[in-house]
Length: 397
Image (tube, rainbow, N blue to C red; front, side, top):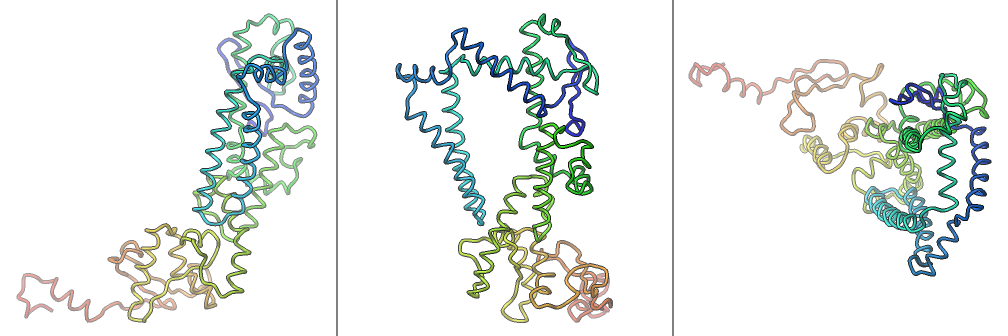
């Protein structure tokens, strides 16, 4: 709700309860103007720019052109790897390239940290520090309408460095809660998507104000909402609960589904039955219809066991059940069977335990809605020799 309202309610021991207004395009313009002012002020005081400091560090052999190029190369490599990852289909390939991305990101992070430590205080870092302080002053208010400033200019100038740093730390903590990962989670959450679907892709219907008046957080949330709405509409199968809880997994599933279409077309054209290197989980994620079969009719009872083995080796439980129920119906075009739904033919089995466990037995079987008698010679013999144990075997019914 903080994003919807456009502010965050804060409470600090020294300053009590106040409201931090989220950044919008008008605040950003004012901050950009101040940034130019602070950078010019820093130059007149003799502070070096980042480029000047790097040049000096190179002369002193504390930094090198090779490291500078390595930073640029790593940044390009990460972008390239992410693009390549979005085109992969097989889970093993995706996981391998993700490891490469994480490795490169760690190397880049170490280089950037080393560079920042060596560069130290510059025109740019001074401007950032002053901008943070200015931002706190201009976005802190006493009221939820963000009309009454928390500080007058004089009051703010009298604050100690410790107090200002405490306010900046509070702002940084709040900003971190709106990082990319959390924004994606909010955009994919049920409570937001329900409202988003009703707004008919109109920012005004959702937030009650024109686009120009939206905060940056509101604009990002709206864009992500539209992005995930499009993904959910494009997917041919509903994602499971675990995928819906992880935006990155949903994006990965969408990319796999999108890339799978060309693969499935090639399989159809060439009468292929599988994809080289693909696991059962991969085929399922690609939306390729799977079913189980047995070589001879007297082995049909092994189909259920085969589905259980597939689950033990990576196939989803839901996918395995579908492969022995709905998938054959879809493949052989058998009509309204294969799932419990109004109007479907009632071919049902009620099991005494997990249906994919070989030792499980059916308790009830319905064919065309008719309760089938499960009594057999085997069941009668079982009853005969397991019941009425107080009588000799020859007298048991």
